[in-house]
Amino acid sequence: MKKILIVVLLVFLCVNIIDVAAIAKVKFGNWDKWDEELPPATHKAWSCKVRKKMISPYIFNLQNFNILYGEGAICSVSSMSFYSRTDRGKTSVVFYSPGNIMKKTKDWLIPDVIIENADFALAAFPPENKKMIIRAYKKEGQEFRFFEEWEIAFENYEEKYKNVASDTKFRQIFKEWVKKQISARIIISEEYMENIMINFMLPKLVIYDEESEIFIISVPATGRK
Image 1: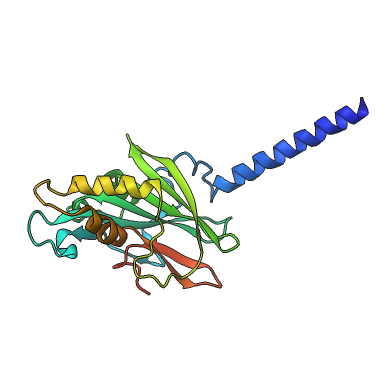
Image 2 (image 1 turned 135 degrees about the vertical axis):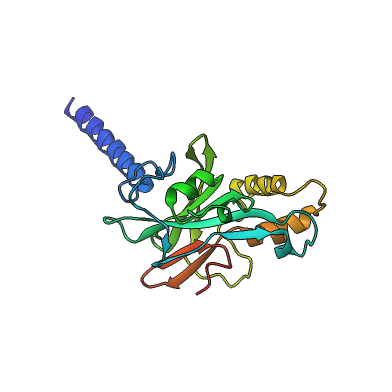
C-alpha cells in the first residue's frame, strides 16, 4: 500500500511540475494569458517607446514595390513594447492596420489607438538559451486572440529578406489579408506577392546587443541600427 501511495505522490508531483512549467512558458511581466490574448490597451506595461524613442507608423505603399498605379496605401505598421519589472527586458510587438489609417490620426502614439485600429499583431519574447518565442494574434471583436506560436534562433541573419514568420500559418493568413487591401483591378503575380512583397512586409529580428540580448522585431525601415 505504501508503495502505491509513493507512486501516486510521484505522479502528482510530476504533473504539478509540468503544469508550473506550462504556466511559466506563457507568462511575461504581470500578464499570464499570452497563450490566449494580448494584454488590453489599458495595461500600464504597454509603451509606444521602442529603444527609448518613438517610432512613427510605417506605411507600406504599392510604390514600395514598383507598382505605380492604383491606390497607394496597403497597410500601416506600428511598433510597441511591453515592459516587465520582474522578467528580463521587454516583449517587442508589431501591429498591422489596414491602409494608411494610422497616418490619419494625430494620436498614433497612444497604445489604445494602435491596438484599436490594428487587425494583426506579432509578439517576440526575450530569448532563452538563444531561442525566441514568437506569438501571432488576430483581432476578434475588441480583443487580439492568440492563434499560433513558433520558435526562432536568436541570431543575426545575413539573408536580406529573412523574417520572423517564415513557413507559418500566420504568413499565409497575412498574405490573404494583404491581397484584400489591394484593389482587385491590380494584377500581382503569386510569386511576386510571396517572394517579394510578403517577405519585405513581415518584421525582421534586429539585434542591437547580442550579449545583453537587446533586440526588437521591426519592418526594415524602422529597425535600422
